[in-house]
Image 1 (cartoon, helix red, strand yellow):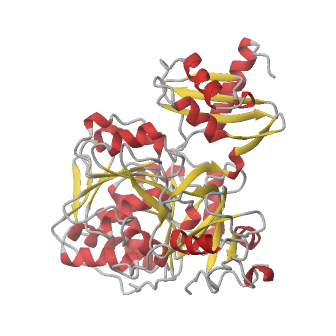
Image 2 (cartoon, rainbow, N blue to C red; image 1 turned 90 degrees about the horizontal axis):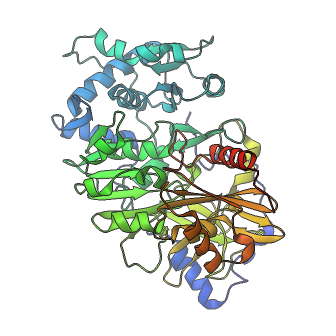
Length: 536
């Protein structure tokens, strides 16, 4: 049974007052700009589903290279045959259209074979990084998805929790089981529809139980099969696969490459080694900052999302390749805004809504703010996913009917932004990053940006330690703490000055490539305890 974005929100509360004239608070000029800035172009994706796009290249470019991982490689024909084998095995185990299949493994050729096989059956894949995700998380996900099958690798089988109700299938064993020239095709191939689920991505669970975001084929086709989300991927181009498979941006790499006929280059231990030999590189700013860009002149297109990007990082990459700064939570399908950046550009923005999508800057009452005012970003359009799996309460809180486009949904991103006069979005971090220190409102990203303005500082992050104190971290370790602090004193009010500034070789990252704020807070506490730092 297909799941549509409209059908999962029948009981979402609506503020009827919004529908009378939601643009009433705006001036005539701002009403016009609300539409011209907030509406992305109307563009039809090249295929209606990701499965159709991948199948197109399996049929039309069978001898083209699909996958590369170390010394191993696989053509589109070989990928077709291997995924058919695996799909046949899953079909005998009862996997059907609309089911969910857990994919508990690590970056590998087998990972991609598993994804393609699941999609061929009209099922949705649920990726988790085996060996990194806690056992209780894997158990929770297998249970809530009602998975009949968990796909893994032989060497990782012991990482998969034993639990009644599902079968564990090792992809590498299945690929070896049938002759290489086998053309076995399952009888249960199912043509996906645009509103069918393609994948279920679970949040990291750092604030509680992980929640499964239900992503449809329509959602994915809208970003991966239109520009700029396709990043110019096409046959002959090499796309790096460097991110954790559980992270939504890994789908940008993997499905983006396969649905556009490119070659996916799966990294081993070295991100740098992969970055040096690909045409397209997708990363979080934290990961991209760890790459020596001077050795990556072959990269033609680079894109970042997931967290605020430092201006220095964007300038460095934008100087030699097409560089996109992007934004969008998992719930709005990888990204819903993007903008090309180049050195000398007045503002490092996150750009404009991607095709068939909208972005609104709203106040706490969900009313539109004047152009140029800071507010919370709500995202609408074809990017809006089908809600959280088995969590109607949270779905109803974060997903709402779109008062500006009746019949559509919008999502509360919890990101702060504002429109520039040119119609680009400036990003000011998360709503949670707008904090009160000693009674004053402080934007944590503003403090970090001030620290990064010091020539010695490449990257900075600032956290709220308590109601009176900020703590900041800068990199590299050679950065001058005093110089960086002086930049804050010169640019911001006194209450924005961090009590502690620590210089680190690199800022620590989570397995998904974002800043590890838990670890940073622990480092701050250890420093305060060890050196007896007096708090304000």
